[in-house]
Amino acid sequence: LGNKFLGNIRNVSVIVHVLRCYENADILHVSTDELGRPDPVDDLSVVETELMLADLASVEKRLTKKRIAATESSILHALRDGLAEGTSARAVLASVTEDGAAVETQRFLNELGQQLLSAKPVLYVCNTDEDGARSGGNDMTRAVQDEMQRRGELVPPVVLSAALEEEALTLFETPEERMMYLEEFGLRETGLTKIAQSCAALLDQSVFYTVGKQEARAWSIPAICSAQEAAGKIHTDMSRGFIAAETVSYDDYIAHGSIEAAKAAGKVRSEGRNYQVMSG
Image 1 (cartoon, helix red, strand yellow):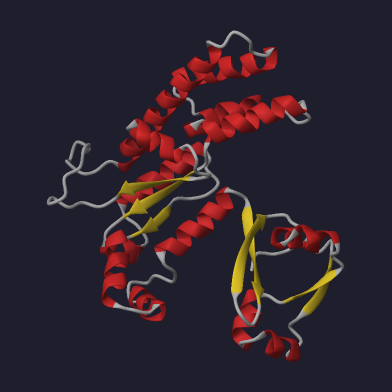
Image 2 (cartoon, rainbow, N blue to C red):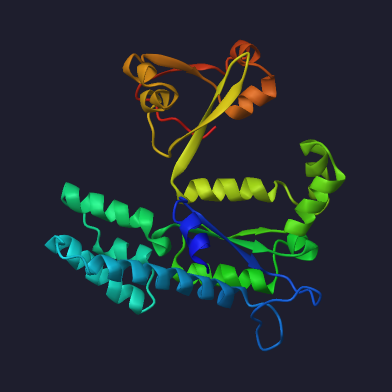
């Protein structure tokens, strides 16, 4: 992996790793199994090793500094040893993080979590063929799923067919037509929707919507967030002066077509500052 590529992904919140999970003799693949088929588990291991090697070089560079606090030095040495043994920075940092850590230590851990590539949460996307998409996967996607279960990953890999989704985009103009086409293959949502939902789960994020006559907007918030905190996402003044807000679920709003119709149907509620905002 080139330095430019590594530099680009250093600034992201989630790494989305797309794995080839289909056979096609016309499309060459770098590594294959003993039967000549793509091996997605081996592919993900190769990329993870590259990320850990880049992190190892970064940690060793930090350790050459003359002045390092004792706690920081201990954490960096743990990272160096773990990375050298093939353990991701994410796993090492999880093992050294303690409840009630000093503010400076927690700040240092947060900094490392943002800068080290193998510390970032990873979403694995299994790109399969049309048959795999129709059946919900194949032997290769199941191998990836088994590997994720073995690791104890909380968010399962996303299974999709990029070729099928590209075909839908090419053949049809409206989202409704594309979705109808995908439904013929037994798909209930697009791959992009699956990826967005899984990324939100990895980041422990939720979303709420504001709807007016001129525009509708989506706002990202922590999964556990009060109405007052959510109001602060729109504007800090709204948080300071927050008393209550009129709320309606996304499904009820879509079903009735407008806030006025939803209110007439008794679906609109007034919620106070401590109300826990739910996604949608």
